[in-house]
Length: 194
Image 1: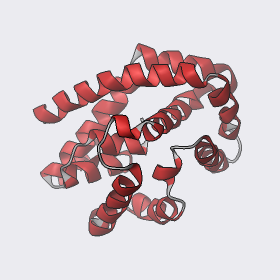
Image 2: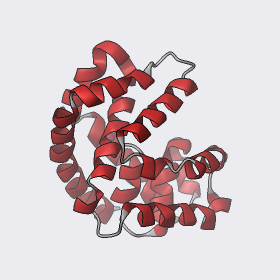
Image 3: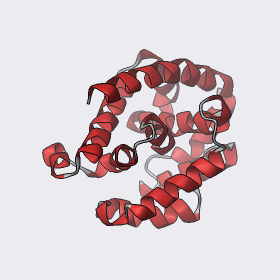
């Protein structure tokens, strides 16, 4: 799953949200150097990634992309799944997406000092281009995929994945919807156990 799903699955505890968001920048056991809430967020993030990567429905989605994008297929599916979450946001959360995203950006500012350098570098771009809200449109996803392709110096060709998104739009959406219901339940259980 990508940024929006990780944030959403964190619940409402601020430190868990921050920990889940910054988890990719925290390696090994160094998460133990952070406050308990952030530790929970990191562990939740790792659980979500592991659960997602091994799930048969997600593998079905990535298989559709594998011939063209190889090991980048999983990254692309994470981004596409965030599109369906953003597009159907009202089915998952009572707060409008634009307000939810703005609240999250405010949370980043409030916790700025505890963010890893990697996140501090990413944050201005994320906020300026409003990545999380842009996930709701196919054009927005196209821009995100182009930025990812640029980061891989064109090797990933992720910018071209909008073609598959449009061609298999309903199939990806159905797979996301089935999988995400299960992920929500599993994430709640995991969070309660941390």
